[in-house]
Image 1 (cartoon, rainbow, N blue to C red):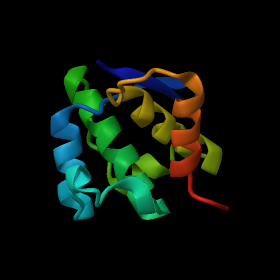
Image 2: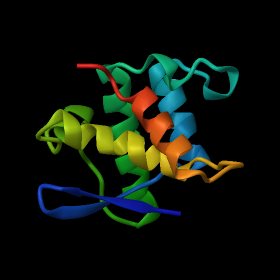
Image 3: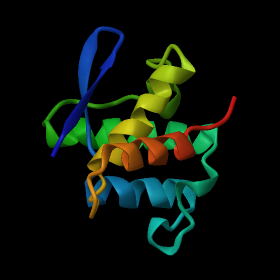
Image 4: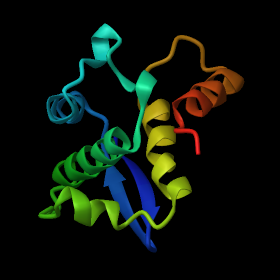
Length: 114
């Protein structure tokens, strides 16, 4: 399922499909299934997650995507807009309990501290 994010007035599709996460893991040198995932989130990882989720969102939508990671990061004018990727990622993950408070706590845990 594709989600969208508003970046500079344009709705862009984002994907957290397995192929997206595999590409992200390779680029970041992580293994999300072995706990080497987003627990120690930093801005570099957040940028890579944003890039790959937007890249594969465009591919699934059959849209042209020929942007570099730096170009994609320029679409995020504030830290708050970049952390929206974390919220979308959290929403996309399967959950046994869909308790809203639990989901909000997960997002808060993943956000980098300022």
